[in-house]
View 1 (cartoon, helix red, strand yellow):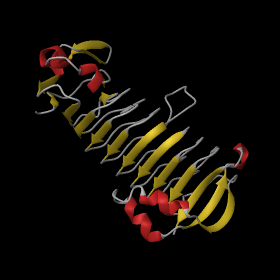
View 2 (cartoon, rainbow, N blue to C red):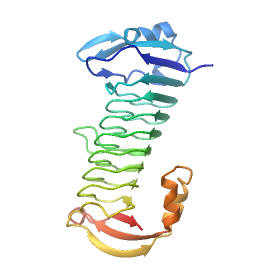
View 3 (cartoon, one colour):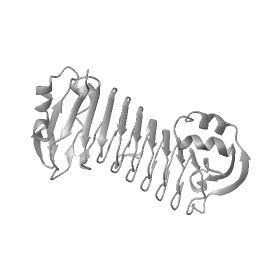
View 4 (cartoon, rainbow, N blue to C red):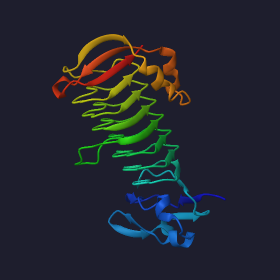
Length: 270
């Protein structure tokens, strides 16, 4: 049984809202019905069949083939199943997803995994700003699940993050885990300026000294933290993060942000 496959027919003149295409919404529908689902293209509605060649059978898996970065909201509010994106994705990928799996072979836009509550989001390419952050105007970002990014992340990754795990295999931009409430983030590459600004709790694990940190972080010295052994073991099958095991559990610990209670920590593995 082949998964339902949507192949973009041509380039898009405006951004396209893909949020209706999640397994729960398509369950029980025939391919002809799916082709008639209206999608917002800019400020007008267009039937899905005009934009995509739709093939396969309706299961709990969806394959989207596209090299456009204008497909927004893929997997938003997803409650189960699997979406595989062969190519690029736009903004708000997996926004508010509760369960299920999203796999992307290319780059994604801003706010991927924002307000995510659960599930597994894996991106082979790069991501824009606010990875795992909050929806604009909201006070809570990612609240559960795991995001695995093999490439680089933009600014403010993990902004207002409250729970869950983000693994970044490449570099991360400025203001990483800004306003973090809780949760865990790992950055294997270089981290930008002012990491941890307004951080309340949570853990940021780095492999290099960040470009700069807020003055309101306190140098807590070097420590052997046994919990790191267990944490690193949990993603031993996820390169390049599995290489952290070679560094042991000794870290340089910084506590902060002292202007917000100072219960967060930045751990630098050497």
